[in-house]
Image 1 (tube, chains in turn cyan, purple):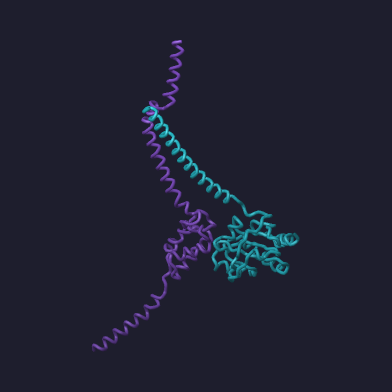
Image 2 (cartoon, rainbow over the protein chains, first blue to last red):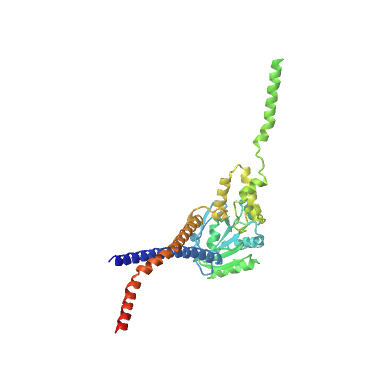
Length: 191
Length: 161
């Protein structure tokens, strides 16, 4: 009887140790997998390019340099051109005058231009706007929230959004001519 | 004689005060070291992995100029850092604040070290205890005891039969 009792105790001891070991292993695996999942999501997000054509425009509110608040959702029914730029960006200067000219040609045709100033300093940004005589709404990308929502990779980048809030055109880098901007806007208006 | 001395001395003090006042009122221009002390706590999103104090792009030069202007205005380090966070987000900070998913950065390393240490301890203890455990099992495990005995009984029966 003593021997049987010893066998039972030994079995319980072995089982308890196995159960404890299993829980420990599961905990370690859960930690490792959780960490890998976080790393994977971060890497996947970092590898994503700009938000694609055919996608809904991400919601954002631009606070202009004049203090006006412009919400993208309130521009439904109009075509919107969102241009990301910065005063330190040389390629942005190549398209600045053409963008203003396109704005003058399309502003009475249900087209809105929004300039989003990316990682810039206000003094230089205002000097840039004055230099190129830009009159459409412009504001800083506060907290880089808008550029992150659009997942831009640099400046300049320009997105054209149709009347239904769908992205219909993306330009990475500067526009090379006024005609290129106007063609993209015309196509969006006709959709 | 004594009165005139006091008058001259008082006048001299007033003159010194008038001359010195503008010098005290004017803020000294911040040195590059002062600017860089704050700049190295910041990272411009345009130049990943390059602290602001050593970044050579125009964007970073503009940021450093902004820091200099803010120091001239009498802002302290916290105010300047807060300004950059409001303008460009938490990502500009060299040391991310412990909120949102960022807390993992601060919590995970100690947790991993503690869990790793516990596992190591347990493994070492199980190594030390293995020999004893084996002896106990060999003596007491029912498989050894019951089945081996049955087998031996069977063999004995066959041999005798």
